[in-house]
Length: 217
Image 1 (cartoon, rainbow, N blue to C red):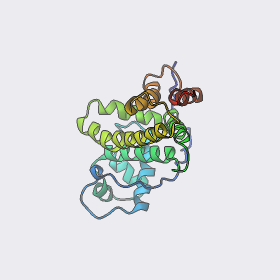
Image 2 (cartoon, rainbow, N blue to C red):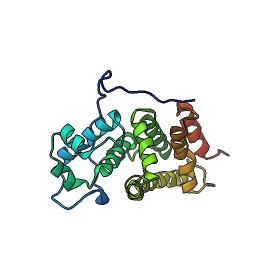
Image 3 (cartoon, rainbow, N blue to C red):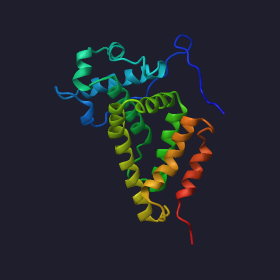
């Protein structure tokens, strides 16, 4: 079953992009130069998100981002080495904004919020951007390393800490490795995005939560 949607630049108004809360700037995505201005950085990333929703990754360019954001190309190149670094950071910041849970919630609630936030992204138009990024990194070693360093490693670190907290509190089962927990749950969402054999549903999230919950005596 296919869940693709066809978008037209001329017939549909742009969707509003939620305001970004600037995350710490990744060391690998920056060139030399003065420190970033948080407001300008957020403006560039919002412009990048808008463009990524409208066009293919192959058509995405620093020139178009600069024009859309109202900044110079020189400003962008002071902070990002290339267009791929902008695209990856825009996705990373959106992912962080959608999935962050306050430390006061239980590990189970944090897990559910992580799943629901990722599902919203993958079901939406940004999901098509993720598909393009995943495809592109298969043929570009530098892009693959950047994606791994800026998205995969930080996300898995957060998820390992969350699952470890759930195991310690008795919320999650203790007979699986933390790596298996991540791949069995979040990996399923990415698999459905890429293969489109089944939709990403609320029921899938419920099943993922039940899968990791500790069995009651």
